[in-house]
Image 1 (tube, rainbow, N blue to C red):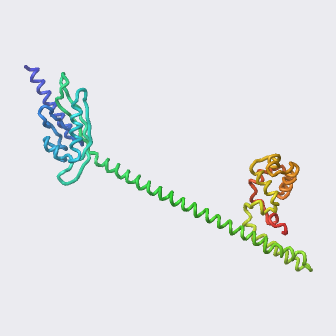
Image 2: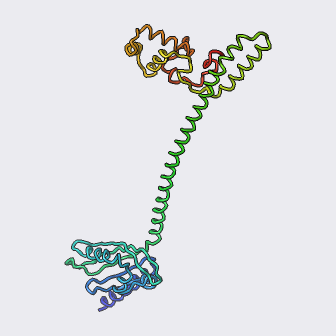
Image 3: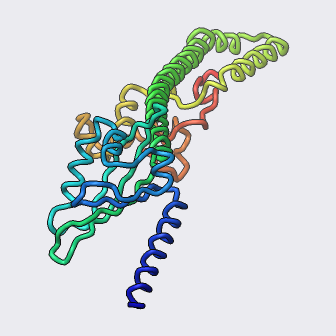
Length: 298
């Protein structure tokens, strides 16, 4: 008799202690009786803050669009062999606000496997959902900005390429004008200068013209190092990596003639006495060109 009374007191103490701990939780804790179809316990936050109570009140709180998935998840957890279940849904509070809840429970069964009760914890995931939504929105905004930046970069590249082309065109036009319009007259002046003063003035004019065109002498084409058409053909094949024999066959020339062309190209590139590969020189011929290389009259 004493043992029975002690067990009853212990069960009562454990029950009260469980309720006390549950009521201190920030999550909703509940106990649902399957045979009676009623909630036997909700902790304080579930009752006071969210308004959970009877089965009817719980269903009314769940958002209409989410009620069917809650029913389906509950039924699935009651199948033979299932011991756990969970579902996420929205609830509509009296103040009109909507909260996202994550419900996770354990199914208690008897020795025959018959489900007796469901004990669960419901966690308010609204803040997490809002953060996730903000992150998705931020990612979407960043993706739009990234696409806009890509489009802007593409447009800028086109503009910069066009600007560089225009700049090269202007520079080349200046070089050509100096060479074709001023070069011949400067050569005549150099040939007909009758006294020291005139020669000095021509030298000053020549130096100033060199100064004017020197910033534009970057990478120049083969046409502007005074190669003949035949030499330009040979130079282009050399840049392609073709041998003298291959070039001779393509141009229907003798290998000796091709070698003569190569030697003259080396002389005009000013590398005839230097151990420099002709193909490398043709591919990287830039920045070493002076006004004197471009215009023989200088």
